[in-house]
Image (cartoon, rainbow, N blue to C red; front, side):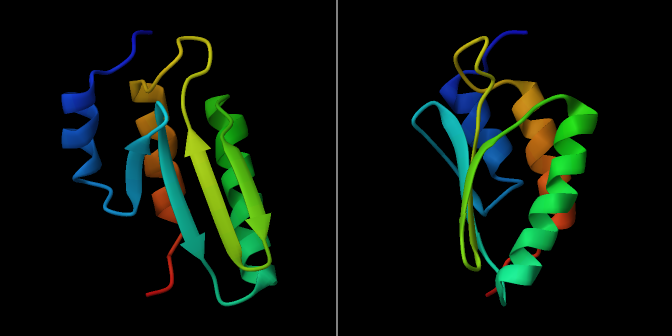
Length: 96
């Protein structure tokens, strides 16, 4: 699997306005109403990660989930990362 170039990544990100490209990864931050809702989303995302055999770097503080996704073995962003972003977007409904 090869990495995607910056122009391709930026074009694909138009479909995912909550995500940004920096530090050679796709990054997003989601805020939930409370810790329980955040942890519930993380649990659902974890099942998708296992199904795709692709795991993000992420952190959680109370009701905020920060996610960073890249394909470590090729050193950048690939189509596999966008497949995970798509799965996460189907789960996460960020607070406005």
